[in-house]
Length: 357
Image (tube, rainbow, N blue to C red; front, side):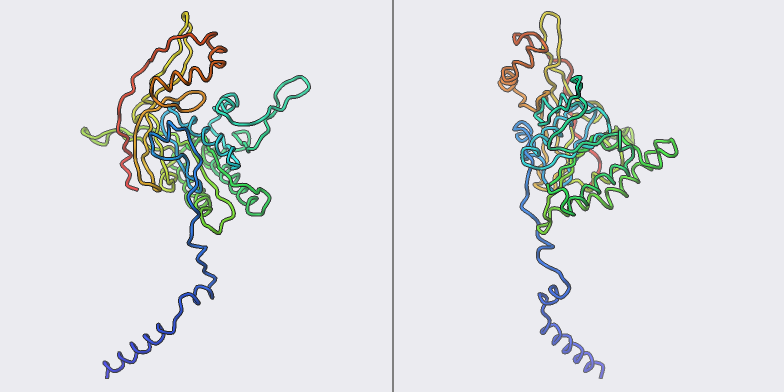
């Protein structure tokens, strides 16, 4: 009797499956193929020197890219290269400057287009152009940064900001959370928790969802992430490079680029020298692709960073750079006939976070 009942149940189940149409079910529920399709991958190009080392065109649009490393290792150079090219592509750069090391002069040297607004006395009072800019004058906590970004995304969705956006944040780890401010304590755990809540569980997903084919705009986040070096956990262990602000941004990032070394910047200065005058000409730095969830390629190499962008690490490229920017060096050194010397030692270190992604 039990066997016969089971046979009836199986026959009924088979009949239901036979008459079931998955397409009709999706249509009835409002599911569409557009909800699972992604746009063709776009890129904001970086310099050829960066491309040659990384085997990547630049910054992937619709994704989160982290630029991390010790101070003065090339992170801002990469960020500004991306911003300049985003501007050229009609992607609106949104600068979030929480570390307050921003230089309009440097941005102009890199090629960012803007005009100076001057008063009757000729004093610069503002800068205008195809970009948005906010700093610690208005954004003093992690939560305020998140609200600012969310508001722009909402305005975009309403049709009031009809442009693809690329957020350029300098930098994660340089700004506390609201609780840290109110308690007058810069608590790392609180800050990391706020980053996870505001970005990992919210804004990051909105940015990544803009890759969907049914999204009218594509939005991107490029963030500089400050770092610290964790001491070896045992006598035979190795130091590890860790991100300030916690690891939520690491986990959501598609691309992570590390500049310099683990325990030190790992750069060497190239100086222009003439009659006792020394001016920094450029720096050599290491670049390593640590996380790449687009092509999977992980690479490492050296590049020369200048005040005008990255160039290849060879004499021909350096000589061409000196010749291309004659006016710049005439202003700083008084001549283009100067010697180049190098200070510092680029140590080779293999970057390891100890993180499985």
